[in-house]
Image (cartoon, rainbow, N blue to C red; front, side, top):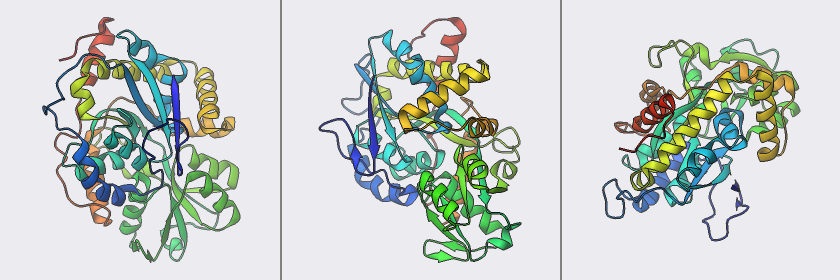
Length: 376
C-alpha cells in the first residue's frame, strides 16, 4: 500500500501529481475553487463514465486524526485491502491536513474517495452544482467541544477574546460562529466582538499554552489534549446543541463522512462496493473489539501517519466522546448549510443528491449474507 502525505507545501510523494493546497480555506475557498475545478469532473452518464469493471487502484484520502478512525483501522488491519483485493484492486492512500485539500484532490482526479468533515463535503457539492462528490456513509459522530482557559465561565466572558478553530468555514468553525451568534456575540471575517483565528490543531495547543489564544472549538483528540495537557476546561460540548430532531438521537451530529467521486463510482461500482465493505468491517471492529486492542491499533497508526502517538489518558477521553457509525446522519446537513450561510461562509444551495446510500445498503447486505454482492 503506497501512502502520499499532503502538507502545505504539497505532496511529499507521488511524482507528477498536482500539488494540493492543505491550508484551511474551508467553505469560502471551496466556493471559489469549485467553479474552476468542477469543469474537470465528468457528469454521471457522460461519455467515458460508463461502468468499466473493477479499478486497478483505489486512491483513498483521509486525515491522520482520531475522527478518521475507520480509515486508520481499515488501513492498519488490511480491511480495505482484503475487500478490494478480491477483484484485483490495489489500495493507495493519501494523508491530508484539511478538508479543502482532500476536496481539491477529488476534483483534480488525484484521489477517488476520501474521509471528510461534513461542511467541506457540503461546500464541495454545492459549489460544483452537485457534481463534485457523493457522501456514501458516515464514519464518526460527536467529539467536538469549545474549551477555554480557567476564569472564562460563560459566553459573555468571551467578548474581546481570541479563539481558534481548525479551518475557516470548516465544521467546527461554523459551529463556533453559530453558537456565538446565539449568545449575542458578533463575529465576522475581520474580527468582531470575538476574534476567531483559523489555526492548525497542533499550533492551537501551543498557542493556548503560551497564552496567545483563550480557547478553541476543536474536534477530538485536540479538545482532550487542551484539557488534559494544557489545563483548559470545557465551556460547551457541541453534543448539548443537538436535540436529536435532525439526527435521530440527542447529542448525535456528523463529524466525519466517507465521500466518493461520482465519476469514479459510475465507472467502478464494484470497487466502491468493496470500499464500503471494508469501511463497515473497520467500524464493526472499532465497536466490538477489546478496548485495549482498539487503543493500541489507533495509537500505532497515528504514530505512523501523524508522527506521534497520543497519551493513553487523552486517547481514552477522546474516544469516550465519539461515536463511530455508518449512518451519514443526512438530516443534519440542511442545518449545517443554514448555519454556514448565516455566518456568511456559504450561499444557499440545494443538497438533493448529496447523500447516496445505495452502496452502503449493498455493502450491508453483502456482509450480512457473507457474499461480496453485485453492483447495481
